[in-house]
Length: 155
Image (cartoon, rainbow, N blue to C red; front, top):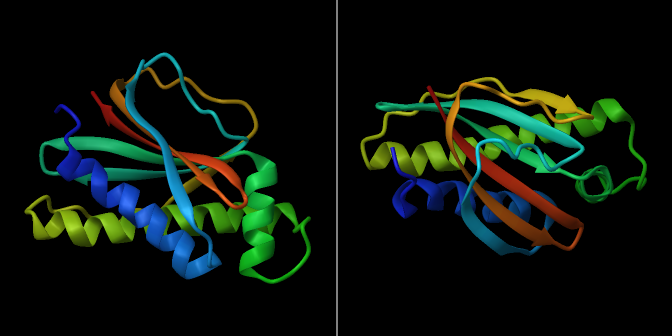
């Protein structure tokens, strides 16, 4: 499947809406492009969630540098700029869930039949996944710092 705007836009809009509603933060799109399959994982912490929509089988990655997500969690919980690692990891998984939830609602209205899945959170070094056929990245800037969403189609 070639990545089409009708498929990508609900994830992009979902990220903007989640930031607005959960953090009262503005988000802007820095870039949006297909990426080489070999390049992978730009963030220190990433939420990964399965996206299966009819003929499309893949994953969504929401990736953050640690300083960016620490500021986001602090803003969400009106607390310290250095929240515990467990809160950061829970927050990344919840962001992935909320973004997919928004995209699911929009895409299912177009007939995609996306089911919800549980996110997995990774931190540290990136991992190369050999089953990826194609990948599309949307990079964002926010008041807290940069982050990105990757949509990956798997073989």
